[in-house]
Image (cartoon, rainbow, N blue to C red; front, side, top):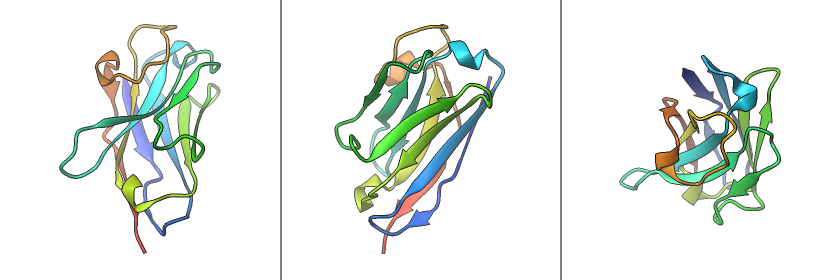
Length: 125
């Protein structure tokens, strides 16, 4: 199983970024995925999750209305569109996948079995 994030960058407050997580080694269309983030000196926290069918999506309250998670089963890729970025969004962003196929979306780190190496987002003027 491999997950490779990309798209992190330095962006001004109010700006936008789209993160991508390219995956391989499992049946993407049957997998539930999530995005998490970790700021320096803080614990990793939930950002967004999308279930295998794409119909169950959840967001952390801190990003609701600004971030959008989506998936492209043809490309085995999950995305995180981030708009109206704030300095407090600065963090390493990680995608993760649940090993059990057709599982429910989850905000719990412990429910995810495989993780990418992360991509860094800095929001600063």
